[in-house]
Length: 297
Image 1 (tube, rainbow, N blue to C red):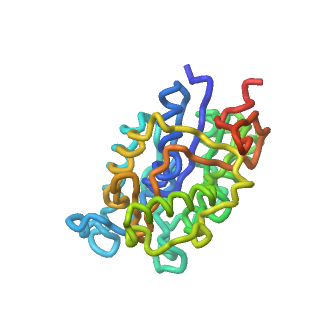
Image 2 (image 1 turned 135 degrees about the vertical axis):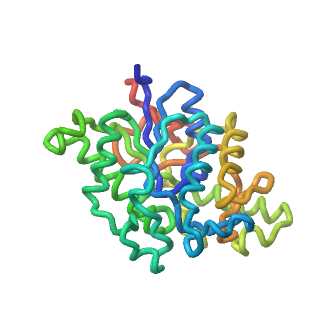
Protein backbone atom coordinates (compact mmCIF):
# COMPACT_ATOMS: atom_id res chain seq x y z
CA UNK A 1 0.00 0.00 0.00
CA UNK A 2 1.17 3.53 -0.75
CA UNK A 3 2.32 5.63 2.22
CA UNK A 4 -0.18 8.21 3.47
CA UNK A 5 2.23 11.08 2.71
CA UNK A 6 3.98 11.29 -0.65
CA UNK A 7 6.35 13.86 -2.11
CA UNK A 8 7.74 14.12 -5.65
CA UNK A 9 10.94 16.06 -6.34
CA UNK A 10 11.85 17.12 -9.88
CA UNK A 11 15.51 17.94 -10.53
CA UNK A 12 17.68 18.66 -13.54
CA UNK A 13 20.83 16.59 -12.93
CA UNK A 14 22.15 13.97 -10.51
CA UNK A 15 23.51 15.81 -7.40
CA UNK A 16 20.94 18.65 -7.52
CA UNK A 17 18.61 16.63 -5.32
CA UNK A 18 21.17 16.15 -2.57
CA UNK A 19 22.38 19.75 -2.56
CA UNK A 20 18.86 21.17 -2.35
CA UNK A 21 16.84 18.55 -0.52
CA UNK A 22 19.07 15.76 0.81
CA UNK A 23 18.20 16.20 4.47
CA UNK A 24 14.51 16.67 3.70
CA UNK A 25 14.44 13.48 1.66
CA UNK A 26 16.21 11.46 4.34
CA UNK A 27 13.90 12.81 7.04
CA UNK A 28 10.71 11.93 5.18
CA UNK A 29 11.97 8.47 4.29
CA UNK A 30 12.70 7.88 7.99
CA UNK A 31 9.20 9.10 8.88
CA UNK A 32 7.65 6.59 6.48
CA UNK A 33 6.62 9.01 3.74
CA UNK A 34 6.85 8.09 0.08
CA UNK A 35 9.74 9.97 -1.55
CA UNK A 36 10.08 9.90 -5.34
CA UNK A 37 12.87 11.61 -7.24
CA UNK A 38 12.49 12.42 -10.94
CA UNK A 39 15.74 13.52 -12.59
CA UNK A 40 15.51 15.08 -16.04
CA UNK A 41 18.99 14.43 -17.49
CA UNK A 42 22.10 12.38 -16.75
CA UNK A 43 24.28 15.46 -16.30
CA UNK A 44 26.52 14.60 -19.24
CA UNK A 45 27.99 18.11 -19.51
CA UNK A 46 29.14 18.41 -15.90
CA UNK A 47 32.69 19.50 -15.17
CA UNK A 48 34.62 16.66 -13.55
CA UNK A 49 36.38 17.30 -10.24
CA UNK A 50 38.18 13.93 -10.15
CA UNK A 51 41.29 14.16 -12.40
CA UNK A 52 41.54 10.41 -12.96
CA UNK A 53 38.01 10.43 -14.40
CA UNK A 54 38.56 13.35 -16.76
CA UNK A 55 38.34 11.05 -19.78
CA UNK A 56 34.61 10.61 -19.10
CA UNK A 57 33.91 14.23 -20.07
CA UNK A 58 31.58 15.22 -22.90
CA UNK A 59 34.48 16.35 -25.10
CA UNK A 60 36.33 13.04 -24.61
CA UNK A 61 34.66 9.63 -24.15
CA UNK A 62 31.30 11.26 -23.31
CA UNK A 63 30.58 8.62 -20.69
CA UNK A 64 29.97 10.89 -17.71
CA UNK A 65 26.19 10.46 -17.85
CA UNK A 66 26.37 6.74 -17.30
CA UNK A 67 28.86 7.21 -14.49
CA UNK A 68 26.58 9.69 -12.78
CA UNK A 69 23.75 7.15 -12.74
CA UNK A 70 25.95 5.16 -10.38
CA UNK A 71 26.68 8.24 -8.31
CA UNK A 72 22.98 8.96 -7.99
CA UNK A 73 22.32 5.38 -6.95
CA UNK A 74 24.91 5.73 -4.18
CA UNK A 75 23.46 9.03 -3.02
CA UNK A 76 19.96 7.61 -2.86
CA UNK A 77 21.21 4.67 -0.84
CA UNK A 78 22.71 7.13 1.64
CA UNK A 79 19.40 8.98 1.93
CA UNK A 80 17.28 5.81 2.01
CA UNK A 81 15.37 6.72 -1.16
CA UNK A 82 14.37 3.70 -3.23
CA UNK A 83 12.13 5.34 -5.85
CA UNK A 84 14.28 7.40 -8.21
CA UNK A 85 13.70 7.70 -11.94
CA UNK A 86 14.77 9.59 -15.04
CA UNK A 87 12.29 11.63 -17.04
CA UNK A 88 11.18 9.45 -19.94
CA UNK A 89 13.84 6.89 -19.03
CA UNK A 90 17.60 7.26 -18.59
CA UNK A 91 19.17 9.17 -21.46
CA UNK A 92 16.03 10.45 -23.17
CA UNK A 93 17.03 14.05 -22.47
CA UNK A 94 20.61 15.29 -22.45
CA UNK A 95 22.26 17.84 -20.19
CA UNK A 96 22.09 21.18 -22.04
CA UNK A 97 25.23 22.68 -20.51
CA UNK A 98 25.44 26.26 -19.32
CA UNK A 99 23.45 28.97 -21.07
CA UNK A 100 24.94 30.07 -24.38
CA UNK A 101 27.21 27.05 -24.85
CA UNK A 102 27.26 24.72 -27.90
CA UNK A 103 25.70 21.98 -25.76
CA UNK A 104 22.44 23.96 -25.90
CA UNK A 105 22.14 22.95 -29.55
CA UNK A 106 22.51 19.20 -29.08
CA UNK A 107 19.55 17.35 -30.66
CA UNK A 108 18.65 15.77 -27.34
CA UNK A 109 19.35 18.81 -25.16
CA UNK A 110 16.67 19.08 -22.49
CA UNK A 111 16.53 22.83 -23.08
CA UNK A 112 15.08 22.16 -26.54
CA UNK A 113 12.58 19.50 -25.49
CA UNK A 114 8.95 19.95 -26.46
CA UNK A 115 7.33 21.10 -23.22
CA UNK A 116 4.15 19.05 -23.37
CA UNK A 117 5.97 15.93 -24.52
CA UNK A 118 8.45 16.18 -21.66
CA UNK A 119 5.68 17.04 -19.21
CA UNK A 120 3.68 14.00 -20.26
CA UNK A 121 6.47 11.76 -18.91
CA UNK A 122 6.16 13.57 -15.58
CA UNK A 123 2.37 13.30 -15.70
CA UNK A 124 2.69 9.52 -15.85
CA UNK A 125 4.79 9.59 -12.68
CA UNK A 126 2.43 11.99 -10.89
CA UNK A 127 -0.61 9.87 -11.67
CA UNK A 128 1.16 6.72 -10.56
CA UNK A 129 2.68 8.10 -7.34
CA UNK A 130 -0.15 10.55 -6.55
CA UNK A 131 1.94 12.91 -4.42
CA UNK A 132 0.38 15.55 -2.22
CA UNK A 133 3.56 17.63 -2.49
CA UNK A 134 5.75 18.60 -5.45
CA UNK A 135 9.18 20.22 -5.06
CA UNK A 136 11.13 21.84 -7.90
CA UNK A 137 13.03 25.05 -8.78
CA UNK A 138 11.76 28.59 -9.20
CA UNK A 139 11.23 30.04 -12.67
CA UNK A 140 14.89 31.14 -12.84
CA UNK A 141 16.00 27.61 -12.08
CA UNK A 142 17.77 28.87 -8.97
CA UNK A 143 20.69 30.34 -10.88
CA UNK A 144 19.76 30.43 -14.56
CA UNK A 145 20.95 27.03 -15.78
CA UNK A 146 18.81 26.09 -18.81
CA UNK A 147 18.10 22.59 -17.50
CA UNK A 148 16.96 23.96 -14.16
CA UNK A 149 14.66 26.42 -15.89
CA UNK A 150 13.30 23.66 -18.11
CA UNK A 151 12.83 21.33 -15.14
CA UNK A 152 10.75 24.06 -13.51
CA UNK A 153 8.65 24.46 -16.65
CA UNK A 154 8.14 20.72 -17.05
CA UNK A 155 7.23 20.19 -13.39
CA UNK A 156 4.72 23.05 -13.31
CA UNK A 157 3.17 22.07 -16.63
CA UNK A 158 2.94 18.45 -15.52
CA UNK A 159 1.16 19.47 -12.32
CA UNK A 160 -1.47 21.22 -14.42
CA UNK A 161 -1.86 18.45 -16.97
CA UNK A 162 -1.97 15.67 -14.38
CA UNK A 163 -5.04 17.30 -12.82
CA UNK A 164 -6.87 17.48 -16.15
CA UNK A 165 -8.95 14.31 -16.70
CA UNK A 166 -9.10 15.14 -20.40
CA UNK A 167 -5.33 14.99 -20.85
CA UNK A 168 -3.92 11.60 -21.82
CA UNK A 169 -6.26 9.34 -19.83
CA UNK A 170 -4.00 6.51 -20.93
CA UNK A 171 -1.46 7.83 -18.40
CA UNK A 172 -3.75 7.14 -15.46
CA UNK A 173 -6.46 8.80 -13.43
CA UNK A 174 -6.24 12.55 -12.96
CA UNK A 175 -4.48 13.72 -9.80
CA UNK A 176 -4.27 17.20 -8.28
CA UNK A 177 -1.15 18.01 -6.26
CA UNK A 178 -2.17 19.84 -3.09
CA UNK A 179 1.03 21.82 -2.50
CA UNK A 180 3.83 22.94 -4.84
CA UNK A 181 7.10 24.25 -3.47
CA UNK A 182 10.14 25.88 -5.04
CA UNK A 183 13.55 25.40 -3.47
CA UNK A 184 14.73 28.53 -1.68
CA UNK A 185 17.99 29.66 -0.10
CA UNK A 186 17.31 32.57 2.29
CA UNK A 187 19.72 35.44 1.92
CA UNK A 188 20.32 35.71 5.68
CA UNK A 189 21.35 32.08 6.05
CA UNK A 190 23.58 32.21 2.98
CA UNK A 191 25.34 35.20 4.45
CA UNK A 192 25.86 33.33 7.69
CA UNK A 193 27.46 30.49 5.72
CA UNK A 194 29.76 32.85 3.84
CA UNK A 195 30.79 34.48 7.10
CA UNK A 196 31.42 31.08 8.68
CA UNK A 197 33.76 30.08 5.86
CA UNK A 198 35.62 33.36 6.17
CA UNK A 199 35.94 32.83 9.91
CA UNK A 200 37.36 29.37 9.21
CA UNK A 201 40.17 31.09 7.33
CA UNK A 202 39.43 29.84 3.82
CA UNK A 203 39.36 32.68 1.31
CA UNK A 204 39.61 30.59 -1.86
CA UNK A 205 36.96 27.94 -1.31
CA UNK A 206 34.14 30.41 -2.00
CA UNK A 207 35.83 32.25 -4.87
CA UNK A 208 36.02 35.62 -3.15
CA UNK A 209 32.28 36.02 -2.54
CA UNK A 210 31.69 38.09 0.57
CA UNK A 211 28.02 38.99 0.23
CA UNK A 212 24.97 36.82 -0.38
CA UNK A 213 23.74 39.61 -2.65
CA UNK A 214 26.32 38.41 -5.18
CA UNK A 215 24.79 34.92 -5.32
CA UNK A 216 22.04 34.51 -7.96
CA UNK A 217 20.19 31.87 -5.94
CA UNK A 218 19.82 33.95 -2.78
CA UNK A 219 16.19 34.89 -2.13
CA UNK A 220 14.76 37.46 0.28
CA UNK A 221 13.81 35.92 3.60
CA UNK A 222 10.27 37.19 3.25
CA UNK A 223 9.46 34.94 0.27
CA UNK A 224 10.47 31.81 2.20
CA UNK A 225 7.49 29.96 3.67
CA UNK A 226 8.89 26.69 4.96
CA UNK A 227 11.90 25.42 6.89
CA UNK A 228 12.42 21.67 7.14
CA UNK A 229 14.78 20.66 9.92
CA UNK A 230 16.76 17.64 8.79
CA UNK A 231 19.46 18.09 11.40
CA UNK A 232 19.12 14.51 12.55
CA UNK A 233 20.04 13.45 9.01
CA UNK A 234 23.07 15.66 8.43
CA UNK A 235 25.30 12.60 8.17
CA UNK A 236 23.00 11.12 5.55
CA UNK A 237 23.23 14.28 3.47
CA UNK A 238 27.01 14.41 3.91
CA UNK A 239 27.30 10.81 2.70
CA UNK A 240 25.02 11.53 -0.26
CA UNK A 241 27.12 14.56 -1.22
CA UNK A 242 30.25 12.43 -1.12
CA UNK A 243 28.51 9.91 -3.41
CA UNK A 244 28.72 12.57 -6.17
CA UNK A 245 32.53 13.00 -6.26
CA UNK A 246 32.74 14.00 -9.93
CA UNK A 247 30.62 17.08 -9.13
CA UNK A 248 30.97 17.96 -5.45
CA UNK A 249 34.02 18.55 -3.27
CA UNK A 250 33.15 18.12 0.41
CA UNK A 251 35.53 19.58 2.99
CA UNK A 252 34.32 19.35 6.57
CA UNK A 253 31.10 21.37 6.95
CA UNK A 254 31.51 23.01 3.53
CA UNK A 255 31.19 21.91 -0.07
CA UNK A 256 32.06 23.34 -3.47
CA UNK A 257 31.08 22.67 -7.05
CA UNK A 258 33.24 23.02 -10.14
CA UNK A 259 32.90 26.82 -10.06
CA UNK A 260 34.82 26.78 -6.74
CA UNK A 261 31.93 28.50 -5.01
CA UNK A 262 31.79 27.09 -1.52
CA UNK A 263 28.70 26.82 0.65
CA UNK A 264 27.93 25.46 4.07
CA UNK A 265 26.42 22.00 4.01
CA UNK A 266 22.96 22.72 5.42
CA UNK A 267 20.76 20.11 7.04
CA UNK A 268 17.98 22.66 7.49
CA UNK A 269 16.43 23.25 4.06
CA UNK A 270 14.10 25.97 2.88
CA UNK A 271 11.20 26.24 0.49
CA UNK A 272 8.72 28.66 -1.02
CA UNK A 273 5.08 27.54 -1.23
CA UNK A 274 3.66 28.69 -4.57
CA UNK A 275 0.49 26.58 -4.82
CA UNK A 276 -1.78 25.30 -2.11
CA UNK A 277 -2.78 26.38 1.35
CA UNK A 278 -0.05 27.37 3.76
CA UNK A 279 -0.07 25.34 6.95
CA UNK A 280 0.55 26.56 10.49
CA UNK A 281 3.98 27.91 11.27
CA UNK A 282 6.09 28.91 14.23
CA UNK A 283 9.41 30.35 15.27
CA UNK A 284 10.50 33.93 14.65
CA UNK A 285 9.55 33.84 10.96
CA UNK A 286 6.25 31.99 11.23
CA UNK A 287 7.49 29.50 8.63
CA UNK A 288 5.97 26.04 8.17
CA UNK A 289 8.18 23.27 9.54
CA UNK A 290 6.73 20.50 7.38
CA UNK A 291 6.01 20.28 3.64
CA UNK A 292 2.81 18.44 4.51
CA UNK A 293 1.70 21.08 7.02
CA UNK A 294 -2.04 21.67 6.92
CA UNK A 295 -2.85 18.68 4.73
CA UNK A 296 -4.25 16.63 7.59
CA UNK A 297 -6.85 19.21 8.47
